[in-house]
Amino acid sequence: MLVLSRQRDETIMIGDEIEITVVDIRGDKVRLGITAPTRIAVHRKEVYEAIRLENEQAARIAGSELPSLNGEILPGPARSRVRARTSGLASQAPQQPLPLNGVRTPRTGEQRRAL
Image (cartoon, rainbow, N blue to C red; front, side, top):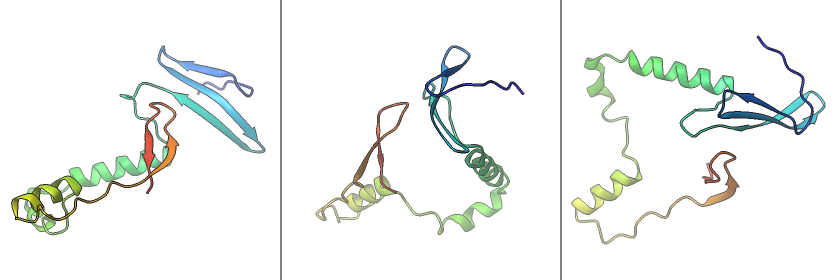
């Protein structure tokens, strides 16, 4: 493991495309800003591990178990609108999109939706 010392507003480069900047230091917490291409996923380690475990569990589902999941997986909003149009319910008002909470993502500048 490489250990580097950085002060506030100093940056570390990983390769040519990833920058890690020390944004703030408060007590025992360090806030880091990460600039990376969108094709590179950036997660906290505990989130990364949870995603990895979920993917492993999903990969282990046997083909014979798939029909039993059919009733548990509900269609998303896009499929709901398609289903409504094909079943004669198109006259109903479409669902309103989730409100934006005004927080912009650091890498892309896109607004995040409220959860």
